[in-house]
Length: 409
Image (cartoon, rainbow, N blue to C red; front, side, top):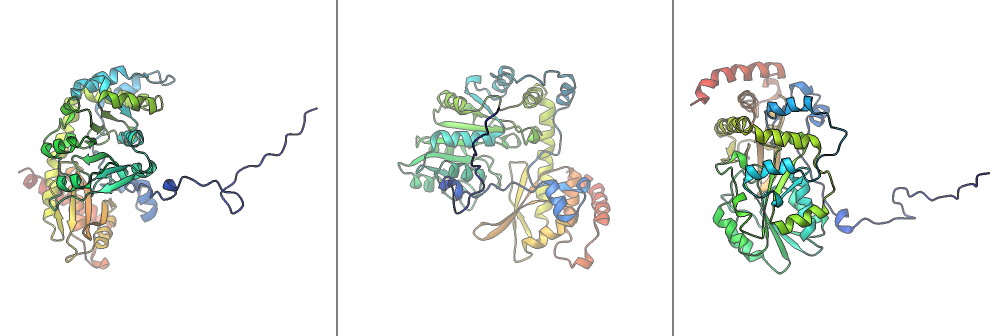
């Protein structure tokens, strides 16, 4: 006869009787807020998914290289784990970056590498310097470690303020992180400034998620082997059109790479990510041709935004353009209302710098620029004067066809 099992107390949600507290730094943690998804926007506005124009997350308007799609049809080993050493993938990355494969660590997107790297060096009470406005995940990752993020604001020209950074250093400062091109301002980190930071002896992290869109597409990979405190992070989400597969990599001094591999879960990059990157690098000319198209469209997008009397765009080296909203002309909610009425998603930054509001636009296709231009033409108009969604679609198509010749110059 089976004995009756003893009663077991099941932990429920925290209550007044029994409560195991979470770590205090986690309790205080503000969540990372990504750009709104198409599904969320559609649910919020009722706009059909197939009619949306998503220009808020810096995603590529082009898909991955065609060879990746073909390779998926031929691959038959999905039941097996990917190569634990990622030999073929790291060999291809070493050829692409000029950095030895022993210095390459793969990640489930570069975001995973950020959280691992911060955890490697930062303990409660330590400090990491960041230069806002910049990628907000740096702060989230620091909070997870119980570390303090020290914000050293950029200069009026959006360059980092090296003098202010040096003045902020103290014995608790372990790391300095700079995004280049910076998200959201789009400017590159000058080599002179990087060398100044490296001379501090702190771990210096250069986040190059957007580097392929810049005038220096090789970035600072060539310096990794020369400095034992330099880390370069990269992504395939933006330039290679692989955001949905979540694959990134870092270039590290080998002493850092060896620690990260111990911390990392096995098989972090799935087999689809392996195939996608290998095929991208094997067909680099096709991938870079798409990058070039984005760069060309970035120029057209910038000029279009500059024509708006209520926007002041910033020249960009990324696949996006940030623009200051001239609030004496129009308010941010007015712009958002006008573009969302046409199913367009942008990224908005209220009070980003000195009380000023900004918006960021992902570079899309030429017809996307034309559609946004048409929507912006109705900013500030009374609702009765705004065009319906259908007529807006016809309007932007007509303007797109008319403007192709002028934009080609």
